[in-house]
Each structure stands twice: as C-alpha cells, then as structure tokens.
Image (cartoon, rainbow, N blue to C red; front, side, top):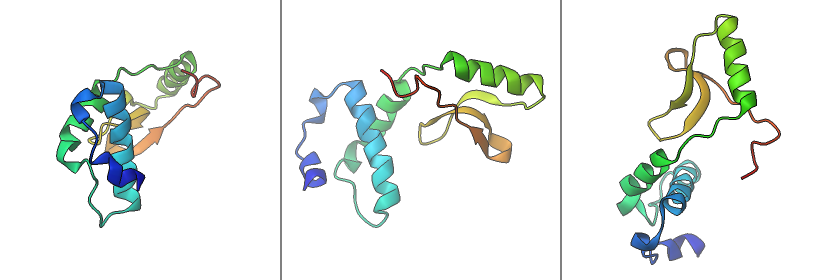
Length: 109
C-alpha cells in the first residue's frame, strides 16, 4: 500500500535529499522484488542524479584507515562510486574488494 502510494507523489516538490532517499528505496526494491515494477521507475534517472549529487562526508576514522591501508601497500580508490551511485569508503574495483568503515559517528547526522 505504501509503495503504491509513491506513484501519486508529486516528485517535482521533492528536494535532492528526499529524491536521494527514494533512490535507496529503489535499489532495495530491485533486490527484494526483482520481478515487480517500482512505482517511481519513470523518474529513476532523476533519483540517481540526486543520489550522486550528495556530498560524501568521510570521517576522520575513515581517513585514518585509508591512510593505514596505503602505508601497508593496499592501493585503493577512496570514496569509490559504483554505477548504482553508492559510495564505497575504499575499494579496489579491479579485484571487486571494498572496505567500509563505520565508526561511532557513522549514523549521526
């Protein structure tokens, strides 16, 4: 019922943060219900654009871990963006390896 009501939302009244959150809902929907159509599929590219516009906010802990990995020779891309728009804290795309650092301030906004 909640997802079907998304189709009635006036998406032009939503800001980038809200569109970005809907992109996360879209990704979850694709994984959980692969055979079904997402109610806002017609604006999926707009959702992705809004999601990609969000500025990354790496923590000091994340920067410290990235520095330590570099010092031991683990070459990686910091804040690697996937084609879905997700940011991985540190990644080696060629080996499909990623490290996420979720410290004490990770969930605070």
